[in-house]
Image 1 (cartoon, rainbow, N blue to C red):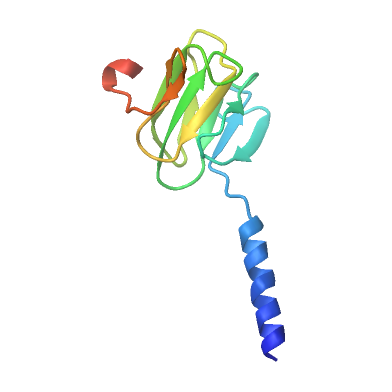
Image 2: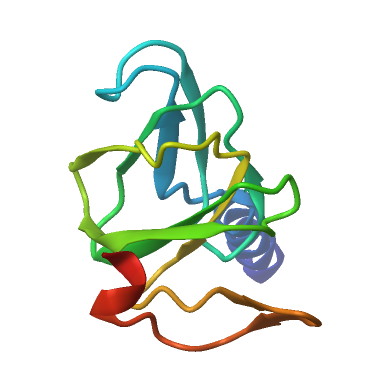
Length: 128
């Protein structure tokens, strides 16, 4: 009996651990319409955005999204946020966006230096 209970508990824990929580979806249209991208986690990973023109935060809480001209989350950066769940954001920067990083909090903290990324909060002047 204890063996079955322990086995069931371990199996349930493995199932829960395997669930991927998505936070953001990118779209090919300007108003979260058109071709829908995958539901990806907002975990600071560099994610492709080529051919996309809008995004929606689908999980709770506030998130900050930094869009990049470069293919490796480098080059000119544009910060959007904080954004809350359910908002559709049209990404109209005047330049093609290739990649983005999403921060699961209210501060955009991705900026470029000659040797890579540093963590710092963007100010209002950074996004205007």
